[in-house]
Length: 54
Image (tube, rainbow, N blue to C red; front, side, top):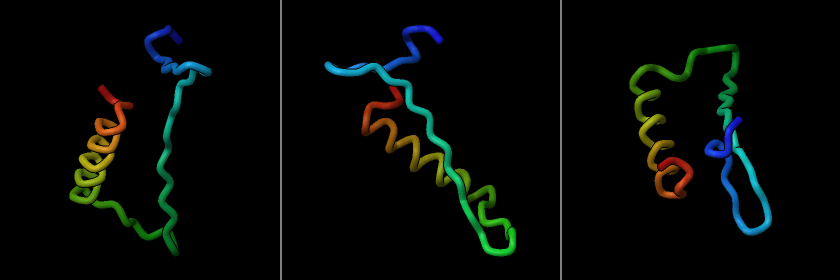
């Protein structure tokens, strides 16, 4: 990893990774293409608002 992959503040240096897990009953598919596009947009907006994604 290079330095550009790390974020830092006054007391720490970090590199966060997120993983979304969706649990469904009886292994039914719950995320279709339309929902996936919506989720991508929602998460992208959250990351931009919190300055995680620039």
